[in-house]
Length: 260
Image 1 (cartoon, rainbow, N blue to C red):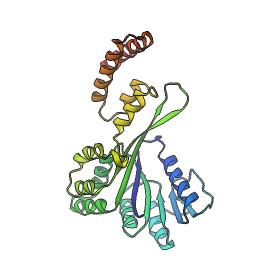
Image 2: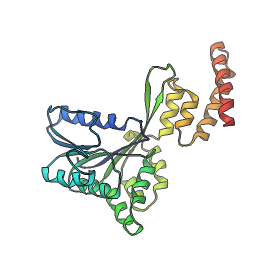
Image 3: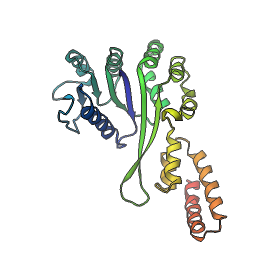
Image 4: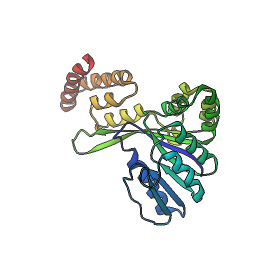
């Protein structure tokens, strides 16, 4: 496969770990030439089925953009770019995807649609139509993630938003209708697509994360707050004593959240 696969999220959301896992999967299962450009290198990979060359910005190469120019001369199959920090790096990454490479990278955004918008907005107005066309043809997927502490206090769990660039979504990108991407994600569940808020609700509803954590990470907290209120009020009306007590406690906890 070729194209651009982006992992997004705020600082500390596990983007680097997710990318390292993807690279390791390719390394273990496919005969590929993989080149990574990172700042700094956080995970070191040994050769398995693939051959991996890792480069560090500031030591092996002066910048991401310059590294990408050099990498293309090494005939890689897979390229990992630590972060799309600026216009020059974005251009180089898209160009690498256009020329038949599978390119992985990260960007500090919190949603799939926001990622597309952020990339386009980096470019001058007179270049935005061109980058929309390039993204519609070369972006293959966006995985946005957030890390949430679990209720038990033992570790954290990841909440994901996942978008596959289908022909319909490619058209939305090309036609500058990114505001409609969320609707396409909602209808793309057969392809594994989901919105971040949908996954946050699943984690909360199954008791894995707390109510305030769900609302803190949500893109539309008001909608999830209403949904939680209805759930808790319903539980309060049940016959089970344990469920009643738990619902009463959560409703009490919801009071301060509503006032903030």
